Length: 277
Image (cartoon, rainbow, N blue to C red; front, side, top):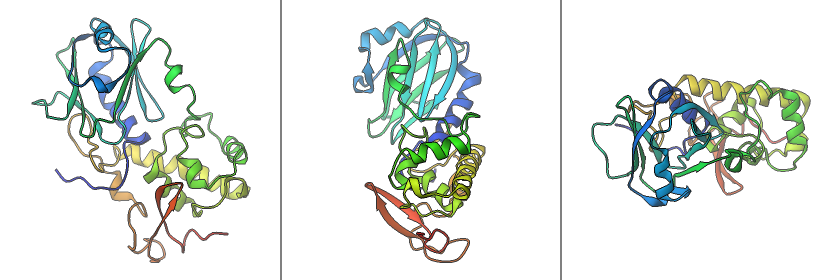
């Protein structure tokens, strides 16, 4: 299986894909068994308390930003964050050496939380807001409008790249999609958030929606360790124009793609299509 190293994942399109593909398998099903293989996976509660999940039904499954939320019949929420190398594998034939937890369901399905670098996290809480309450607006929600985006940008004076990946401003966008969004909008990543014209805000808004929607349609980007629950690869990486394409010709103007660092994050852009002005 060929995976491409392009950056940290999963981001919004990958988690949305995972949610959509898990829904028909687990919604309405009860947990029948939990095998916890790595206690470091848990932030809250204890391993013993987490066993109370057995017998509970999954009422619904939600994505918020990069978080996956299982709403349970007890009223609690089981929340997962895959971080850099986490994956949720549905009904794999075997349990690999990176497995950290295995969830078994009443329909016979099982879900493995696999994580090579052991960075992923699980919580089970009474109030999901304790974990996700500070997240910013969902960029694909109907409530996200050009006017809201303009307001959010005016409230800060930071580089646009930093704003796009700040989860307290807009939830779900990570490093690679931020680069693709700024390229599509033809805006330099170092432009300050409070300097955009009305027309530039409009371009940025439509780029956010289009890039993320396109990536969801392609089932996310299979970079590093991301695979879909049943083992298939995503295809969004084949549409990337600048992300991790340093020194390669821009597909629009042929100018070599450059890499700079913005707030400690590697950032790729085309100086021909994204001039700093």
